[in-house]
Length: 401
Image (cartoon, rainbow, N blue to C red; front, side, top):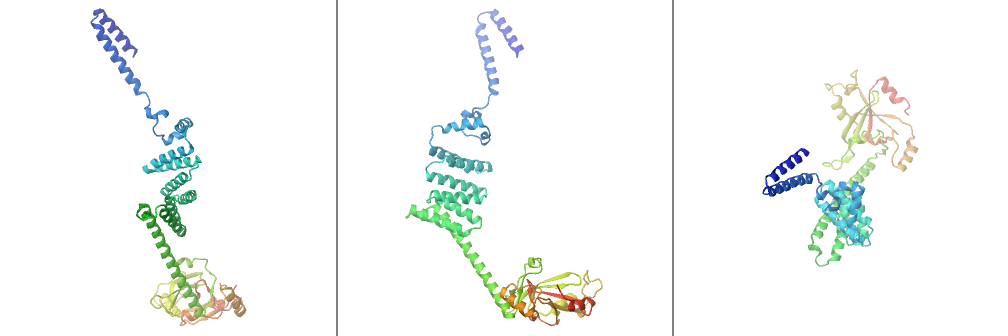
């Protein structure tokens, strides 16, 4: 650079020695050199929009810098809390419209800052809260959305948008009754503001659609629950009619987790079907039958499981579990009746001792369940042993704990 300046000076001196006509040429050449230097220096300068005083829109990362944040606050100098809150609301709206995760976060922050102004305009505060609820819904923060919407309604009961957003959040949280109440409140607010033309407003159409959706869900849910309750009542009546005593679950939920239930058969509404557990106490094994029709006998199921030619079970190492070798037992007082009054009667009638009662293989399930002293331990359970074996004799006679 210095070398260039010296060269230019020598060149200038040479031209001047040549005569005055060369002065204009030298002046032009020097002006061009100055312009080139200015262009090079300009490249090193920051763009004006990056200088805090000239920023048209504060960048989100700028707020991490205390100095820049302080400069940004200058634009609100001399404004009232209401004016500042309004400005922050508008800025938040601009970010919300962009819709990116970063802009949604910025919108939330701007609405919150507007609320921090503690302005006396309740309607404006309601708008800020409602808009923040809108951001929360976009972020799937439904608890936050519901809280903000309810606060907005408290601040301004006529804010139908807050009602819509609160209803949306409540429904998403699984509170349909609260959602329905909020949707109805929003419709009432619209009608109160414009009795003649409310129905034609897009906001009314949107709220009405949401309300109808929520109402349809509640109606469907109630119908399902009523149907389920009727089915439970029918089963309880059927059990009572059959003399079946239901007791506390014995299997710690592992059988109940299969999902099978005591039901009336749809095609044969007078017949009940039960999940049944077959226990093999000598080997500590269980079999689960998810639907045993009450008219079916033990031999009907066991002949399928242990008929000649069926594969030998891995735990039956001696091959003893064959249809002709088996005995079925019901154990009385295996569980405590769930009905307190029945429990007292059962204790007085049968005591608390457990007794193994052998059942005929030809006995249907319905009769087995009505065995005197037998309590269904959550699901019917029966014990299968090898008849005439030492274990069978001990099982039938030894005291049970």
